[in-house]
Length: 216
Ligand code: AP5
Image (tube, rainbow, N blue to C red; front, side, top):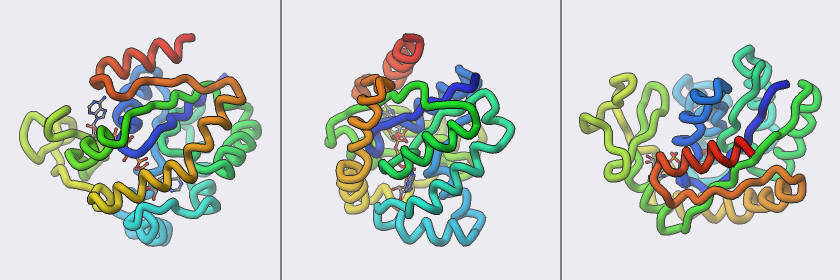
């Protein structure tokens, strides 16, 4: 049976960093809704142009288009064994839709690691983040610097700062998380799938905490 893991937590807590490591380790697909929107933006698709208007303001992209995008992604062959969902669901309507979709595909949400860190840490991580243009690998100028400044260690592409990592947008993203996404903590806790992870530790320690939580 396929395994589906939903990573829950505020912007900048380290979901993308851990999702990449875990997907490789567990041989599961990594589905990042933010990366999918950014790919559409780069390809200048209609979806990309629509998403940009919300992303630049730190608001959520409407549920219907987001759900349709994830549904399509889940039907690709690399999701046969399951996936790590990073950034989706972000609203109760998205969580209900995911439950229905996975039921259709013969699966369910198996575990929901919920990663936490205080707001001060989130702001510090987002303001120091550098992202690679080619594949979205992430670095941090202090916590996780690339070997060569402005160059991705993995694919050699240029590193850039995301538009939505500007301080005023970061504040709004955290607010939107608290209003619209935080209710999912209770949603998944009531289903018995939530496991809390302390996201303030260094990257290696957080990965270890994930592995032991997922083994349980
Ligand atoms: P998205 O791209 O999903 O952004 P996010 O959820 O805000 O998450 P981030 O990518 O900012 O942070 P992260 O937790 O992945 O942290 P990271 O690993 O990079 O969404 C962007 C936008 O798209 C949304 O605002 C919305 O508009 C739209 N969108 C996306 N999904 C949607 C949905 N489902 N519905 C509607 N709209 C949606 O780490 C951050 C930094 O910290 C990095 O520099 C990293 O190197 C560093 N770091 C990571 N871990 C550690 C550690 N343990 N110690 C020290 N530093 C660390």
